[in-house]
Length: 543
Image (tube, rainbow, N blue to C red; front, side):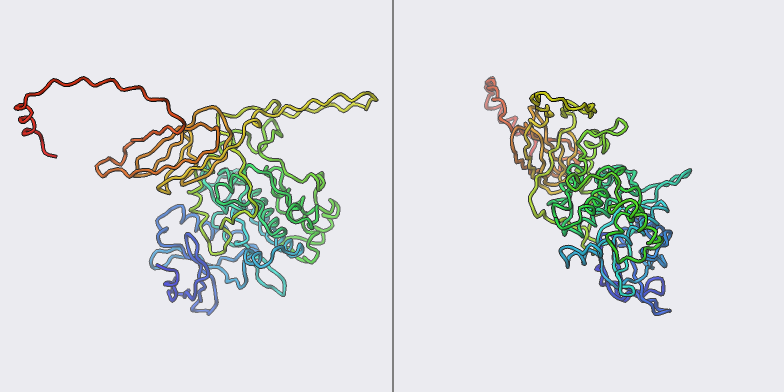
């Protein structure tokens, strides 16, 4: 049933559907008219096919309860909730006459700094209120930031707490819907911990997403873009954050440093809370006179005491790059980003669950979900196969004492030993599969569903690529990672008489198989008398 077919329906005997406002993967949003008070509202109606899905229903209810619990003027107001006569859940909210930030960014290449910071300040104010309630939004993007006109100024309404999460409070517990490895959110604005599928997502993930949004608003580009969400998530996990100054050289270097701090790979390196972020960018929005829940003049005084960037100990513009995950900068004996084990697990979680995550990345009618092709081609970071890592010569930084200079001949500098992994070149492995829903395994580890491209390090070991699909005969190919390769798997459908749980797998040697041994000659059978041959043929069962 199309969303337009709902026009004219009446929900709860009082909300008459007038028109479609937007359509998403799990529901649609309509403008409705309250028949008794003749007032406009917006209604989000859950698709009927999800009525029996407990997780989806629980998330839908959570959106209403979490949004209503915060009670902040920069968050859309929830006024009612109910169920239609055909069993569809719906949420009633205030009707917003305006447009979302995604449409605003479409119309301008780069926003004015004052305007961009004015919008972000209001979102951060709403997030601070949500975080104090223990609620993490987890899906911040331009499409969920709605801008209306209030007294001639841009006023923000944050929407869509559908995948928000209530964190456990001290002395209590919270039953979560998110499992480890489950991907929820919009890829371009995901924090590294979301991309890894971590279950314990903190308010720091919202800080990261707001850093990405501010980056995009002030440069006209997203920090990471790729031709598929698997490659995009890999970039978020493995690549250094780009310097905003490299995209927009006219940006204030201190503001670029603020954005990079908000987008730090390690949550501990980001702003501790939304208030700190507000204090940092407030000087860049001189026309902002009101932030809900704050004394703006007091904040400006605090920002002046800290400095123009609101950063203490921040490196200068020439050293703005954040630390990538693979560097061995340690804290408390544990590598940043969770160490090699966490990184390896994250890579395979991303690849294996990417398609599952796509169920939640579907279009929401606001345009914030799509993956745009990169403006400049860049090669994905190489993947090191678990169990094959080579440890660098020095994994822990050592402090060297500084001595007074002595007038003597400078000794020749000995080149620093490079990790052995640098000697192994990168190769591309392109895997095409048919049917498109076939799952790919590398050495027994799932790396995704459907055709994919990988960037790997060369080695001398033999590896196995296996492709499986329901009701198809699986196939394996043995390969060596010595050069670029393209593999194509066309799985054959199982015959009707073949049981569905058949484990039959065809193994193909890709790299020069050993010459087969000559078959031993078969012994000639004793001649059978003609009469006996005729008798055996007559007694044989028909086909």
